Image (cartoon, rainbow, N blue to C red; front, side, top):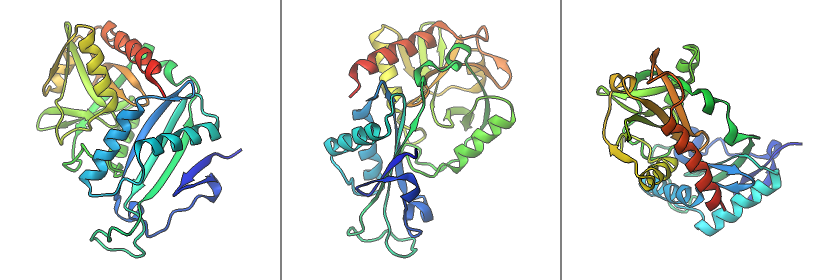
Length: 286
């Protein structure tokens, strides 16, 4: 049975879903997206994703086609129609179809294109990788300068993922001016003693929803959090490293550019932060 997807107000079999060839998301990557995890049939960190969606749209001078309450109803409906217990909901909002191609933005009467689809991932929170950790490589960060806007222009992250795959590892950390910015689709952290270190928010990195929750939980657990730049060499010399994202939650990193981090095994801080994050966000899921 095919999935049900949502396109501009309609719930359709995926085979019948269509977007115009003149849609600016297709022609210009002129759109934003969000990925919301589903655990036990409920949405994780939904309010945070709505807030970031609104910010991304505002930064691109795009209309937000729905209120948070309407978004919640749509998300719940597509989860229910597809019977998703564990998995993700992908949302994309583009500037829409102006009827032709032009670099200039169309007038405000062109409605945004809204697409949602689900991916079922049974056992999403029980990934075996959480027990063994990820290995990463470092590569130059040559993305555009507004990484804080969660746009659909994901070509370089895709290229970075493929570089990691070809190197036989799990992901890549991106480096700019000698410092780690973030992973290909996640925020990056190191641990030294009882201190979690991660790059401060700016235009340089995505303002991760999971990041915000994890740092809040870490502070509540009396851990010190330091938001500053760090190098690959510092990361290799750290006690632990990990990443956060909406679909990986908290994932330990045990090797960077062939060098073991700490003991080269999953550390207690990453393990504990994953436990706390999953426990607390499940309680707050909607």
